[in-house]
Image (cartoon, rainbow, N blue to C red; front, top):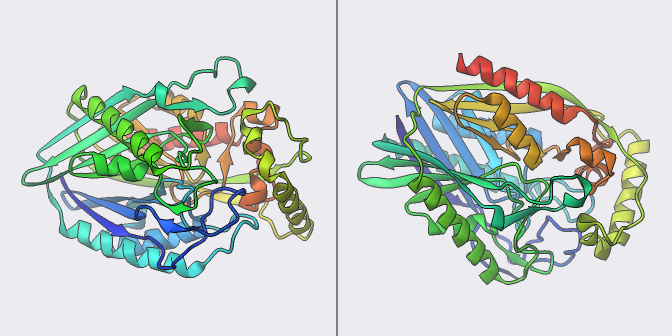
Amino acid sequence: MRAGFSIADITPGERRPDLCGFAARKQPSTRVGAALMARVVVFESGRTRAVIAVCDLLGFRQADSLRLERAIARAARIPLKSVLLACTHNHSGPMSMPLGRLIRFRRAYLKHVESRLVEAARAAAGDLEQVTATRFGKQTIRELGEYRCCRHEPGRARWPGVVSALRLERGQSQPITFCHAGVHPYVLGWDSRVVHPDFPGPLCAAIRGHSVFLPGCGADVSPVPAMRTTLTAVERYGRRLAQATERALSRGRGAALSPISSHVVSRRIRFGFSPALPTPDGNDVAMRSLLKVWDQIERNHKLWERDRAAGRLPKLASFRMHLLRLGELTFIGIPAEVFGQTGIALEKSLGSGPSLIVSHAGGNWGYLPRPFSYKHRTYESSEAHHWYRTDGGMAPGTEAAVRRVVVRAARRLTR
């Protein structure tokens, strides 16, 4: 196995770009606190190559992600199916996909991201060097996060958080480290108007050598602390997660990363779950954060109803999932915000070898809710689709169907 790394600055060139991720943040940014990055790793085993790329952005539409993946594939000279492109789901960056009527989506910015990803893919392919040793490990990080809807489901009061870490040593070159954790990256809240990669930025800076943050299943997980305004809080959180990453590696073991195989599987999914807009509930953990912007939520809901009546919103979608097998490790990219329990259930079902479920990969269709979300009409199933501009939330049963498809595809890939 050989591996190469490159990093590219994707910070917007505008002086004060708008920030997306929070309906409550209606003013443009005031400054750049830290650069937004695209990190690209190229793997090579024999004549086979694969790429994992991660951007410090909220997410892409599936069509835009596909175009970026094609550009990366051409630059790295690999098949399209061997490109896994994800976003950290950063809430303090520019709008990288349309989200309701929050702020204006600027397609020109995606052109900038594409050019930088191409440069990084070429540079990573030119940086290939022999991997001399590997180490994979896990570490509990329960103190760093919590379920934000825990009161709705018995037994969810404590988040069983885990960070997974993979390190590739490369002779005389810097090692490459992957940190995989399912935590929503919004240590910085809506009161912050600073362009920043949130905790993935300081996390990667604190780890020895080159590093990449892989977003796990954290759709219903808030960091502890969350919604702060100071960059000190973000730096502290990133360093704590970096320390947990190093502990995971110190307790880990070697991992075989050859051979390389990849597969893309698609499933048609249906949208349409759309209960009436609920009355704000001040006792709901998730709802409390929305009360400050309830007037904007109601306006967006009316605009959504108008577009739905006119037939402008998708009722069906092709849900593309990427499976990348590196020896005994399987990376699974899902184009949605994936719940913590979905990741746990998938890992148990897959069984053979470690599996890293990467959310916001290959695009982002919105939340992939668990059954409790439909039962209790939580934000993720009942309101988020107003921003994601679909005909409703994903239909009940979609999450279970996606898990079945992933398990079948992964088993075929390991034969």
